[in-house]
Length: 108
Image (tube, rainbow, N blue to C red):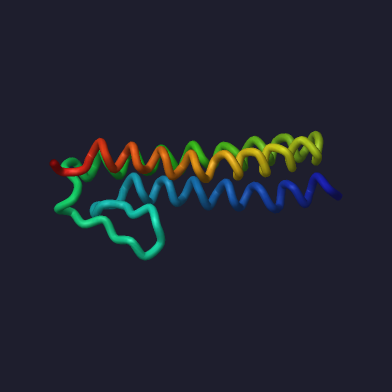
């Protein structure tokens, strides 16, 4: 039963972040990072490259949930550890990765 619950929780979250990454990658206008904070087209020098980098960032973040899904099928404690450590470390890393992406593509 534990294993089914892990799969039911982690797979939809992994799918969400993959879809979000694809959306960011394909978007014509600059992708935002913070909710409610719009990135203006005039701020970004290369919008397709900026959005591609954003998309890759979100696709990489989804790996935490896919790994947890696989581990959840084998060992629910290991899956829990991956989710906790991945989220606690992953969220600040997302912010740092985004700042690096924004700095790289910010119009000078």
